[in-house]
Each structure stands twice: as C-alpha cells, then as structure tokens.
Amino acid sequence: MNRIQRYIFCGGMAAYLTSLFGLTGIIWITQALREFDLLTTKGQSFWVFFGITGLGIPILFMVIAPIALFIAVIYVLNRLNGDSELVILNAAGFSPVNLLKPFAILAVIVALMVASLTLVIMPWSFDVQRDLVTRARADFLTRVIEPGQFLPLTDGFLFHYRERGPSGELLGIFMQDRRDTGHVAVYLAEVGRTVDVNGQNFLILEKGSVQRQDDSNADAAIVTFDRYGIDLAQFTPNNGKKPFVPRERSTAELYHANAQDPDIAPLIGRIRAEYHDRFINPLFAIAFALIGFAALGQPRTTRQGRGSAIIGAIIVMVVVRLSGAAASTMMLRQSVAVYLAYFIPTFTILLALAYIFRLRIGGFFAVKGRAGAVA
Image 1 (cartoon, helix red, strand yellow):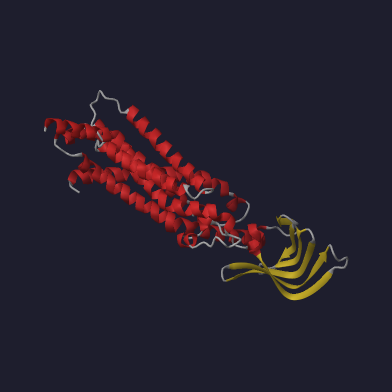
Image 2 (cartoon, rainbow, N blue to C red):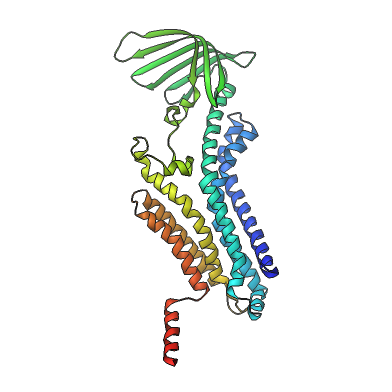
C-alpha cells in the first residue's frame, strides 16, 4: 500500500475497532447483568462471574464484527467525501481499485477473524462455559446453602444438612430423590464433602444409608455404606450426560457426526445449519464492506446529498443479513437450502463489485454494440 492507502486503512481500522468494542461492550454489559446473581446470591467470585459472562464475548464479536466493519467503511468514506478528499483523489487519477484496496484488506482481516471465531474459538468458549456453570452449581451446593434449609436442587431432588464442620464438610445430610416417580430414594449420611475427580465434581457421603422404594414393591430396600459418591453434574439438564449441542462441538465433530446415531439423528438439521454457518459468516464481512463502499465510494459534491446513499446501504445490508438468517433457518429442514445460504453473500459480493466498477451487463453490451457499429 502507498501512503494514501495506509492513511485510509489506518482510519478504517480505528473506526472498526471503536465500533466493534463499543457495540460489544454495551451488549455484553446488558447480558452480564442477567448473571449478576452469581455474585449476589450464589456466592461466586468476580473471576467466576467474569469467566462465565466473558466466554460469551466470542459470539458477540462474530455477530457484531461485520456490522462494525460496515459502520467503519461508511464513516471513513463519508469523512473523506465531506473533506473533499475523494474529489481530490479522483481528480488526481486515483482509480477505484486503488481506493478499494485498503478497505478490501481490512475486510479480509475481519473475515479471517470471524472465521477463527466461528470455526475454533466460539465452540471452545461454549464448552468451557458449560463446565464453569456446572462448577458454579457445585460450589452453590457446598458454600452457599445455609444449614437447616430444605432446598430443591432440581425438580424432585431435595437437599438438607444440619451444620457445617470445622473443615468445611457438611454434617447431618438428608437427600430425597423423587425425580423418577416410580422410584424414590432417601439418602442419609453423617458427613459429606465435595471432591474434584478429573474435572468432575462429586459429593462424597460417609457413614450413611440409602433407602429405596419402588411402586412395584411395598417393602423399602435399605443399604448402608461407608462411602458413597454422587455426581453433581446430574443436577444440570440431561441428567449429567453431556448432550450433543452443535454450537459446543468442534467443526471436525460436526463434519464427522454420525447421522445413524439415535442421539444425533434428531439434531441433523441443527448440525447441518451450524456447520455451514461457520463457513458462511465470514463472507458477510466482505459483503457488508463492499455494500458500504458501493454506496459512498464515488466522490460527490457538497450539493449532492449522501444521506440517501447511507440509508440505502443500511437497507441493503439489513435485507442481506435477514435473508442469510432465513436461509440458515431453512437449512434446519431442507438440505438444498445450503446452496441458497452460500449464494446470498456470494451474489451480494459480486453484485457490489459490479456496481463499484460499473460492469452492468446492459451497459457492457451497449458499448460492444456501438463499437461494432463504428467498425
């Protein structure tokens, strides 16, 4: 890039980062306030709170980055035109290709950033976030519940302990499990403490008994034990079994998902949509940058209003994004919608480039026709 292009690129990068972090910060604060009970009622530290809420930032970046790039392109071109710099560059023979180059480089950088977020970082963040939430619930069990309370940990599971020991252990534990209405279990233990085994949280009960009652048998079965472990992950949804959530899976896992698996077969539409969305999302960054450039990339005099061009670009950008979202929804039900989902941003890119360089089909053939007539 020459000096002028570097000047435009730096201005665009500054505007993009300002828009990206500004919009992300506002949305993140509104989302984080919903989880503020981690600090107030669940007794978690600030770092746990920040970890759980901060792991949602990659998806915010992914959604906001193309929009922030569109805002940056509109802002920079509007400023250049307002200062008559575009007019000067055009009079000096600065071609549309040279003017587009810094914006194209910026768009490629943003597209690569979005690709890294959707393909790698975002699935990892969702997976880690789930583990942190599980740990927070385990801490809530042993640190926050007050002695003497009868607290339902989940529907049908009641927890109580008499007091807390000097080392933090729970004394006088009572638990009633009625989640399966046909099988009721009551746990009694003198001592209980939580342990971490290979990243999984367990409640270890000592010196107690389990009383089980089935509807098919009037007599209760009582089993005594010295030590008994309960997986605390069972108090999260799906009974502790980690489900196949497409957004939490790596791109390779989505690609190799076995449609014959009974647990995966009902999710095949979501898997298809999630997999292809990860490759489609970076294209919207390039499309939005070109839409902004097509609207304001040509020099205008001070008498020519730019408001209508900006509004038109915003409308086109919104229509393209909503069309992409609609195609993504269609992919849940129909595999043929995959082609439509790729077509929308690709066609937008090609159409914007054609408009930028004035390669309209009709105009092209009209010029060829006149040239033939002269010949």
